[in-house]
Image 1 (tube, rainbow, N blue to C red):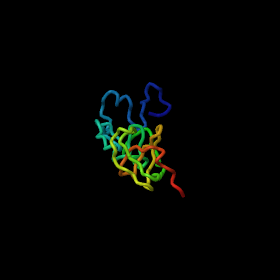
Image 2 (image 1 turned 90 degrees about the horizontal axis):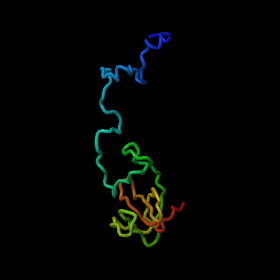
Image 3 (image 1 turned 60 degrees about the vertical axis):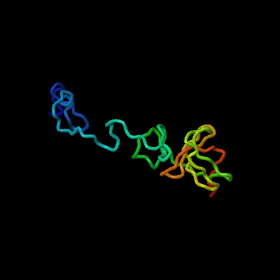
Image 4 (image 1 turned 30 degrees about the vertical axis):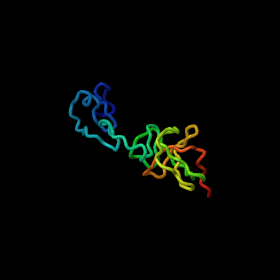
Length: 141
């Protein structure tokens, strides 16, 4: 229709050029209903191992952007384990299972601090866990 046509004769189109009224009426608009893109709401997603993948419900390592959808991605802040080492735990709790013991000088990718606990990983491939903040120091340059 020409732009000067009466409003009652104009068809409303969406951003893809499809007639909105035809879509609402269930008419075949020629558009595919296939899922598109990397994030598809097609059912429950499998949950990765939280001790191997730096991913929580609220936060993930920036290296996982495009693979997992979370509200925030963090760029890891490099830290070094202080003399005496540090146990890495599955949860921010002294009673939580110990995943491994980090040795003096080991590198730790800090992603979040909550209270006296640091959450992070040794690398993007894990392990992932919690360490006492006072067992870590900034990397000296």
